[in-house]
Image (cartoon, rainbow, N blue to C red; front, side, top):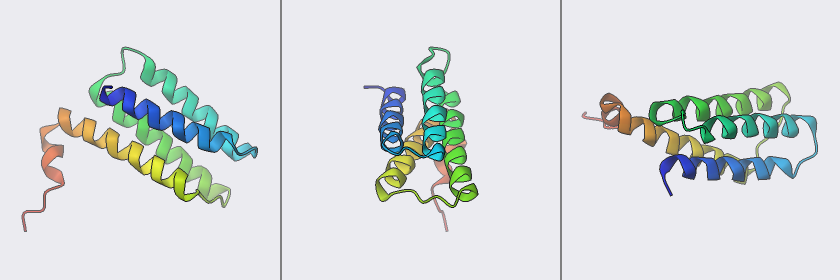
Length: 106
């Protein structure tokens, strides 16, 4: 499984976790995740373009959480952070400067 597919699996897992909930906020998040999966599934979305798609989901979910005083479950939070971490790893492969940004020299 390539990196892009691994992120899509995490997105589907997150979609499933939110899909269990029937409130409007969760359903809005599910729709946004579906849209991002469709974009990632496109052959045109490669490498550096994966990170922004994933980050937009994270930003959207966090904004919805703040706006509606909504709490993520531990499982939702773990999957979201894993997904964002995988996207960052992909970006680091395409930007040499990012690969070094996690190293503290002092």
